[in-house]
Image (cartoon, rainbow, N blue to C red; front, top):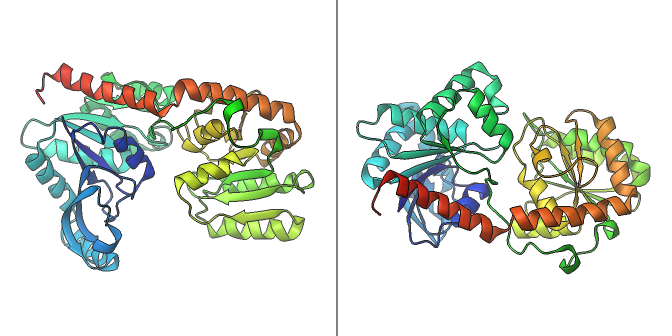
Length: 397
């Protein structure tokens, strides 16, 4: 089987999805949907088609690189910028050429606004029969961007032209149908795949949830992330947090850093911005956390929510994700408004002070994780779906 992925080559979600099939002996290719010249270090057994890329920053020995290597990622970036000015459609033409040369059985675009739009553009000008196209919806691709006319029409076109649609929320499947999708769709499973070593609560090496003293806050602030709402809630709970550490990860905003520093000085609470860490290191921090707090105005399942479930951290997640498909509000977590710090604070106080609640939630979420998030179960399902698609298409591999 030969699969060409069109996706963000520097994304952990891309790496985790592709790595599920990396040991199958299939011929796997990856065309970066955003031409940054970057490769995620966890990717394995895949050929990647950059335009220009810095050699020092692309030294993954498990990857075969195509494109033009230069000694510096800065120089590569300058050349890509010049190319985009001279030939705005250079990546469209490159993808068209790669498809013609690779001749994949399946094209699988991961995410809509970059990968999906690029694939759609090429399909509309491709002179031959286009390979089977699976279009996967990430995060806010439909739920948020589908509200804007300039995106809505493109999303409808993707849903019209793709052969299969996949997503990680039942919510998004229903939204796709409302946008006119009438085609085949794949089972609803997490876009980041499953988790290794999902253990039952009694066997978990980490502390019982009620014995933990870390509040872990997702630090995204921007068009969707609302870390500042989370910090506002932290401020309102200051008197309950004297013996806790507040750790903020994936912080992408000077505003969040400023607010965290202000709260530390005002309340005396230990508040720290975590430096970039590996996924394994982050999971270890989750295992030490009593509460995970993730607030955004738009998301799909939120991988962080799943990470909290796997590690026993009590999840507080905004209602703009499809958290309700995984946890029960008030029992195995809290689902809160994305822009109301008062309610977030109210729920956070309960999670801080109710040991029975957080320990019971850990048991329930671990049971769910064992059934729905085990790496090997999801991997088996993913492999089966690709094989079914090939079988249904009568392609001989």
